[in-house]
Image (cartoon, rainbow, N blue to C red):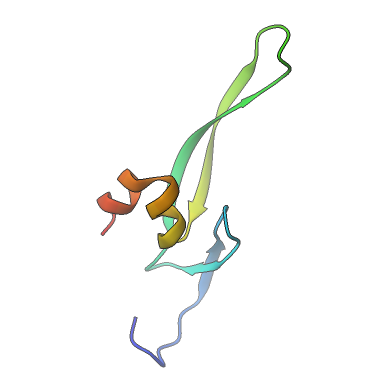
Length: 67
């Protein structure tokens, strides 16, 4: 995006809480485990948004795939 252009925020990065626009958002699906250490833990898939910087660190395959 060129300097001075207006962009609208469509979400907030799950990791750093930076506002991200449509051109920079990186949608990610991740596995989340929950429960205690005793017994069978549960889990589910979570859809979340990352900014380009956090995607590079936390989900490099996502960052590389969306360039």
